[in-house]
Image 1: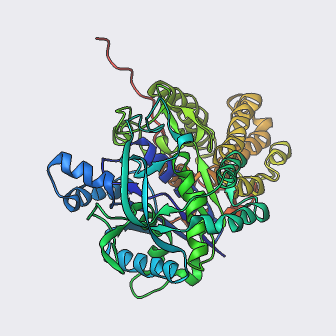
Image 2: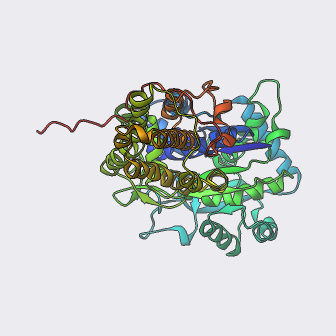
Image 3: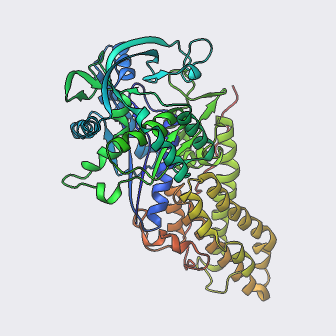
Length: 513
């Protein structure tokens, strides 16, 4: 079985920020989990390098669009390994292989009768690279996302006959209700479709920074049609000498933020229909990380630098927080204060301290040997069905719900320590068997939750599993010890543990001014 997951490709008009990290981390959690399930995974991310936003940013910086794209693409590439992200390919839309494939697909769209020459005029946001309908304009004449005044644009372009595909799009949404999720986003996209679709500009005549139109060299393709096709074109050259389309297309999951819903949930399936290509299985639309009530945006100046957070707390802490604090799919406020509270209470205390205490008790009371005895049946029962639930939740992109399901068991193991008081059991030789059972149950419980948590906190999970003496770790998600089947309680009880430094060290408070 194969699983193909994508992030949107990110504009190179500015450096990456926490909002970019959010989507990329979510995609990585899915990719890692599906690898643990034994599936053949392809995970794509990259940069969107053409169009007016990039040209304008380059002009403002006094460099060429190519120079700006080269500089910022490297910043986005550098973000992935810092986040412990395991993408299989990083696409740049300036790649010549992508350009060639875009020209081929859009020529097919033209040959199929979905392109015509016409005059376009309307209100335009250069930062969105998007014409806005009257219903999308706010505060008189401003973009609802960037809050800048719109400009009136008029030019002769080639048009994509989107209106011809309205009936097929409505049929798609009726027959495949899971094509767009969550349901609120599906309803939003369907409402846009049913309001009546107009033909849209396929090319731009005033720009030179873009994919040239092969049948008219005076035009370049409108950046969105160039960008959307990256999910398909990447498979034609991601592995030199191989064409991966037969194995991975159509994609199982496109992850996007809600500001690009119209393009991915309306334009994208229409474009594929016009090109006679299979449609992706799902577009999952998540909300915004909000600071001061607004989506994080470089143009608004309200961003958190993921590199700074990682330098202090580590990548795993950031990965955990972003998918723990805000329910994935919804808007949610984030802050440094909330991050530090979550780090202290859950990562350092609930999980890290549980692991440290358990290992130290095994070292102190049993010389590091994990007793091979029957596990506590009551605790085991509370793990029943956990693997299937987490797998189903990740499969439905319910990443926060899956994490909470795992964390319920982390809290249960902590409660078990308090209930059983192994330090008291250790003082009574007649209760040695009880102590054996408690220590073995804790070691196995920690192993199980750590295998499941690996997709979220891979670095620390590997470190802890190593300290638990788990064999078969090889630095990949496909290591035998990480197979999702091994996360069943009692499937692979550790035998010998070694000491471990704190997984999530508590941070020293900043000195008073």
